[in-house]
Image 1 (cartoon, helix red, strand yellow):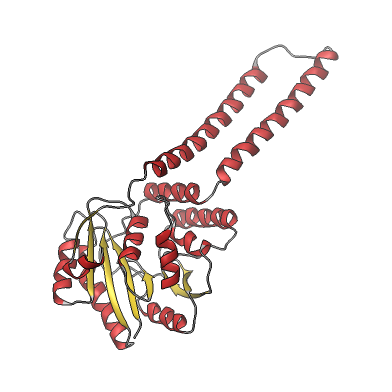
Image 2 (image 1 turned 180 degrees about the vertical axis):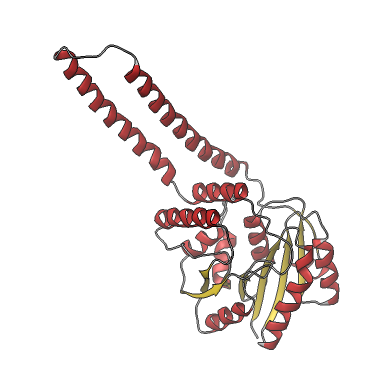
Length: 311
């Protein structure tokens, strides 16, 4: 029987661990699916890993990894993919906002021959208007950048072992999981789901962290911002030529107005464009610097006993 690996990143999710294990295990057993649940504690400061370790001793289906510090969700996902031994892997959130029953639906589609089953949000659940607007803008931009519809995408998806092997072979340190799974190709389909409410705890994502996440992913997967710098330079050159022609015409006609207003405006506009351009270029240089150093995506502090042999 095929083995399904469910990869569950967890950051300070002590309250959710037992409930997540109970619900997922019950649904997968009822569906007669052989499984392993891999929890990745991303530098949690509460009792998240202790809960995972205790559950692992009571049930061999439960496996756990603890990072030496917080490395982020992307690192947690790829750690799970590195460790998983299943014929197919599902990535989902620890708070069960990704509905567990959809995992069975994904698995059945995989049995039909699909190699990537994408979870698509039909409803984003209870989010602030500001958050929905920001998320919508980010996904519209990413859709144009990678030429794939990402407006309702999420990290909730099933990957065949062939796809997992491709992702694990990638050498880059700055990864964007949901975009890379599109980039890899393979035979794919999608299922819709509604985002559920958290049973326990609160979200660990603030607007500031979401903004940083968006910037990191946009620059790690696309060179469009660099192309924007070139476009901005061309626009400024065109603007300068038009303004120079206007100034020359007025001078020749003897109607030139004395003063520094035009000069000041030009300095402010061009200075602002230069600073934006330098910021974008600097961000890409930082990404290159991080890649050149070749540091690992994550550092594992400890694991549960039932996966030590797989590292």
